[in-house]
Image (cartoon, rainbow, N blue to C red; front, side, top):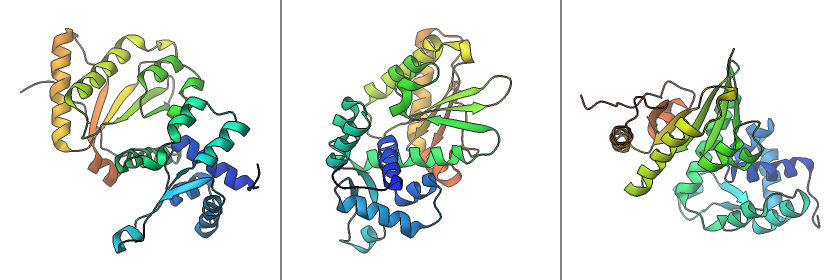
Length: 261
C-alpha cells in the first residue's frame, strides 16, 4: 500500500466493506474501542489518505449535527481488491456508492444497528451473516445467495438452532416488485431450504409504515389463496418506527393477519 495505515484502520476498511455505510459510533462499537476521539482520528486520516469518503455537510445547523455516513472510496476499494482479493463484482457495485440515495444508506445503517443488537445479546447467542458472506455461509449458502435477504442470522438454542432472514421493505417499491418479492420468499421458505440443519428460517419484514404493513398482509393473503397452500411459512412483520423505538430484538414482531375477519 503506498500510504501506510494502521491495523485498526485496516479493520475499519473491512467493516465498511461488510456493512457498506456506517456511522462513527458503529465503527467504535464494532472495534470495541473506548475512545471515540481516537476512532474519529482514524477515520479522518483514512479520508485524508483517500481510502474512505463520507456523506456530511455543514451547510445548515441540522446537517452539521447529523452524524457523518462513512463508506469506502474508489481508491479504498482498489486496495481491498488488490490486497484482500475481494470479489470484483461486489467492488464494481460499490464504486458508485458516492451516488447512492439516502434511503439505501439508512437501510445499511439499520442493518448495522441490528447486527450490534444481536451480537450484544448474551443468551441465547445470535450469529448474524451479512450478504457479502452468504457464499461462505456454513450451510444453505445457495438458498441465501439466490434469495438475497438483507440479513441472515442464527439463534443458537438447543436442541436445534432457529434461523431468521430479514428484509427491509422500501416505500418506493412498485406493487409488482413487492408482490414478486413476497412470492419469492414464500417459494424459497417452502421449497428451497435444506432442512438438514433445522427448520426453514422465519422471515422478518420491516415495513416503512403501518399502511404498508397492512398492504403486505393483504398481498400475503392473496398469494396464499392463489397458491392453494394450507399453511403460510413462518413470517413476522413490524414497522420501522417500532424497530427504532424498541430495537430489532425487542417485542416488535407479530405474525401477519391472514384472515379478513
